[in-house]
Length: 218
Length: 217
Image 1 (tube, each protein chain N blue to C red):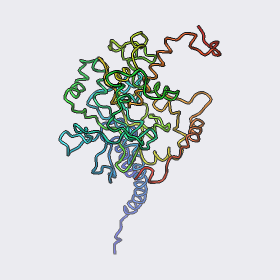
Image 2: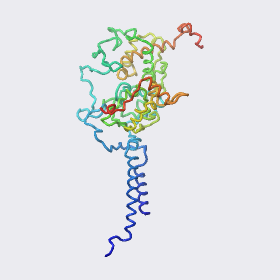
Image 3: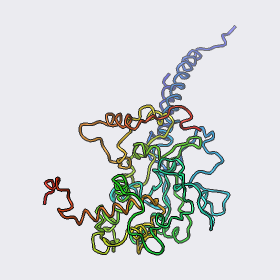
Image 4: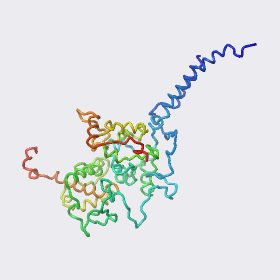
């Protein structure tokens, strides 16, 4: 009986020796043991295409066309909007302009919900360079990025909402355009939050409601 | 007449009687241990074309996951960022580093970087990132502590039973919405994951589908 036991022991040891344990770090593509329809003849987002010459499944819109659907067609609830502006004709909303001039005030209604959304989006997209309070001292400035302005000087306190929107959309100097990462409505929410930051860093006791002034510590 | 069996036959009968059950048991145990995503998938860590460190960017620098994976809250697919997103910073930061040569090349030519995919669901699974992130399932629940990984590693099995275990008891994974992308979040003092999870489940009316068509359409 001994040879049988020894054979099984060796087989087990050899299997564990070759295959290792669960969770081992490895570079081999996961083995598909039953690959039935795991890979279907269809294109997934960001996958490689054998059909298109540039190898991309996701196509860029042909010149002179307008994207139909997507963020402007669906509101946040996922239901189609009644008045989708596919062509983005609304200059005030999509470009922050009225004629040639930047508009002074954001073309959206600003309430606490918008400000909170703005804070969230600001902290995600802007704070790495501009800092959480907009002082231009975000973490990236410790890695060699120079020239990030503080929001808290006279020039930036005085520029219009439309111009802030324009800079987020198209970038300025070393700052890249953020129109690909942030939707227009969120850009306006960020504008509103930037205004709130400017107020918060340049406030006097008179700005605090009278009944709550006792809570302010010098 | 001589017997067709000799004395050693008895030994062979005993050997077979032991071997067959032993082989069956070991075979089943082996399959159960190895032929499952816990073994085949977990730990998969392909070398990427660019030595991008999640540990540095998402960990030490504290970037939100959403800075790069910008559509994860709205799209079924959590996008791999375009080269543009890298260049937002790397035009100015480490602009000449040889580690970023391929990023600059991609930026100049317009050819995307061919990142290796780590996590994958089969094509018959319709997983939607946005609904999970927007209902309070954190990134960490499925992807592990990416902010501590130099190179991203497959952390969870992503098997069907694993998906279902959470769909049956979502309270074990739910967290406040604002903490969905915070990989280091822990329940505050005096609360447990379950107590918070149960509250979120009730408040948001979470009813994770367990029927087939929830995920297979």
